[in-house]
Image 1 (cartoon, helix red, strand yellow):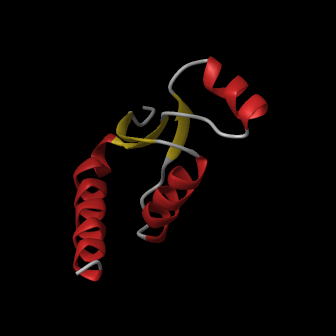
Image 2 (spheres, helix red, strand yellow; image 1 turned 90 degrees about the vertical axis):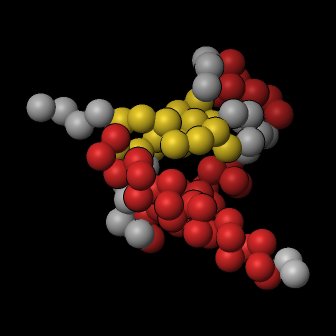
Image 3 (spheres, one colour; image 1 turned 45 degrees about the vertical axis):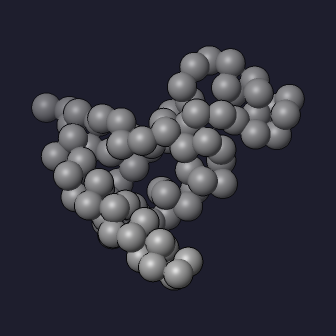
Length: 81
């Protein structure tokens, strides 16, 4: 049976998507990037950036992925003072 993938969040651009995927993968959480709509790929070619990139994770790892992102955000907020 094929594993079900669900949306974790939407990144605003390629850089944010890569950072999030890198964090997930460093915690052994597989992820996939998916454009929100068909025009996003064209926007990447024309404008050099895509908008609303969906970050997908296996459904069984969704709680773990959310916890990881929440922890990373809390650590980042502490660093800002």
